[in-house]
Length: 72
Length: 262
Image 1 (cartoon, rainbow over the protein chains, first blue to last red):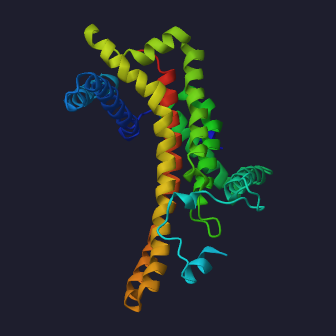
Image 2 (cartoon, rainbow over the protein chains, first blue to last red):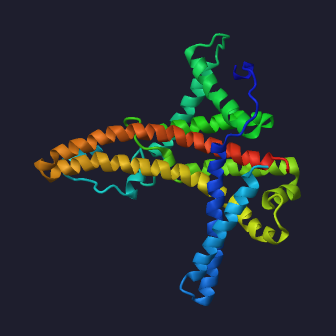
């Protein structure tokens, strides 16, 4: 049985986290890009709020990834 | 008429389209109640059950080949994913992760199995259902461990950030944990299998199309078929990789649900 093998120390490899971080980056851009889109619909500002929102979302999600996964 | 005969007769279903994924009913009914997909899912489940029953029917200290394979698969999910991602607490998810892995791997492999050559997972319904299982599981586990309020708070509020950033980050966390995770989980598997099938169709049927177009193109059509073989091997790799990624992400989501606050 696999349980008969000596137990490995729990270690989380960085590659695993990579798959989840992408999700954060996407959701940040989507959420704030979406808010920007709503603002744009109200203001008719040629889509500039969408771009601003997406950039803010990207910055925030990178910050979030640092907080969640950054070295402690 | 089989597809090859159809193609040779010049009645080329070209270019490949989404219609290629809507298979007819196997018994000739008008509404597709029992398609090749249905058959494949049942076959996959039967194959997995029979394999594990046979492999563990007479377990020995020195395992037979089948027992060794079964143990490797289970050990890989239990140790490699459950223990490594979640820690000791995660070992109880070993059976779920193994079942998930086997089901996705076998249904994916239908994509390159002769006579089947399409994976049920190239229909969004199957990955979506699997993603729902994982979604319900990790939310349930989080609530069961921390209680509703604490679980929500823990998944929405990241540790040590300035208070004025919390509302902004909460939006991202909410979208990520409760809305986007099941979507990306399902879409990743679906899109890989869908695209894989389309690519194989393009290269196989493209060979026939070139051959039919003019004799001059015959060498190119040969090249197209050689590439089909190469891409089939690539597809085999992707089938296994996507099963692994799905299980890995399930483990990772469970881990974030069960994690203690730090």
